[in-house]
Length: 85
Figure (cartoon, rainbow, N blue to C red):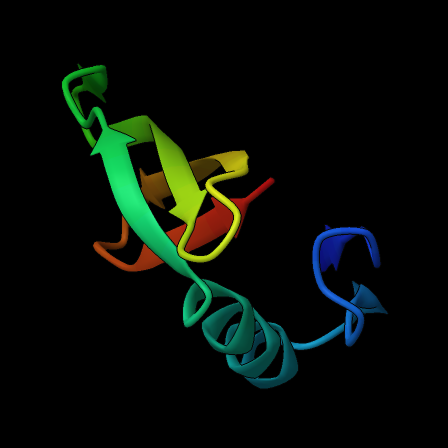
């Protein structure tokens, strides 16, 4: 699940499902460019790995910033799980 306030993008609000969330996020990011991200905070523990990646985007027209954090988790079965907030 992802939630983007309607003040950031008028098509947003709560959305459920990976496909719907990805499609909506893609629409938003068309209006932004990545200013900075940092993937250096990787945690590894025997059969698990996780990373939280802070992103700072800049709106192409207004210059307004948008800060997000994307988290990725690798579980013991080797499948990649993703979360964004």
